[in-house]
Image (cartoon, rainbow, N blue to C red; front, side):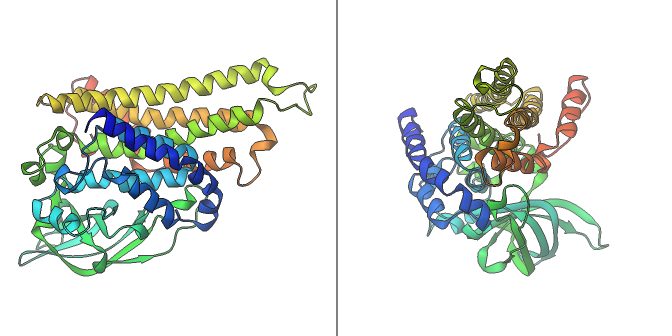
Length: 392
């Protein structure tokens, strides 16, 4: 996709931000992103950024996609989270067999896909594919989607798991149960998906091992560099980008709100003239910048490797994971500083600082943001030890 086309999408998305920010409070209270917001993002071309060109997508460079996610998240954390996960799934479906892609997009190029990747489903081999049953939690934005990517285990003859699989399931084969009532990212409607003995044909399955090896049947028809990038980089970045974006948006709200505020305690005076407040702002801004810069650098370098047709070094894949989880950690450090220094003004329910604080901390508990595990993998690789993990 040309830079001009990419900028057009970003400009279209940015034009929506005032409306998204106006709806942030009701999105949080109603526990779901409004359908009109999703339709506006569809019309802006956002959800086609990582979609294969052969189905009307843009195959945009992923750095531009994550920039758009951060912008949306700065207006509303829940909307940014849903946009990011629904927006990254067209990339993943692009790795599936051509027949599966045809089912999703042939009749509706704007079809959206949600997910719940935990391998809690049970797959039993049957003629032509598998029978699937299970209950999956945390499928963000699932009510807006007509397909779901679900994690499952193939169960052998003795009842033991023999392989980890991701399956693609149409809306007619599952039901959604409204259970989402949480403290942060309330508007993501990350509800449960339940499947009872649905048939999944072979072409709508993908082995997680092959995915980690950067292999997928979809690469035969989607030959662009975007589809030769690691799931462990693309998907995990889609989980951290909304957290960073929400905190960046909070920072802007904080500066605006606190610039002219006069303290009623600690001797009074303008907050902006307090040296300790100035230092706090500097620390928060530096953490946000570092999180963004490292993520963009790593994603860009991996994409450029794919453009050149080179094997992506494990060292770079591990560095991307290291900086992705540190990006989340840095964002939390920044928003904790802002929340604390805003004092009692940050406690009022529904104000942008309080909501962003809840959203950022809620996003940090996603398995893709398991800081210690990801850092341990990087250290293991740095010492020359073999690293085997599907999220690298």
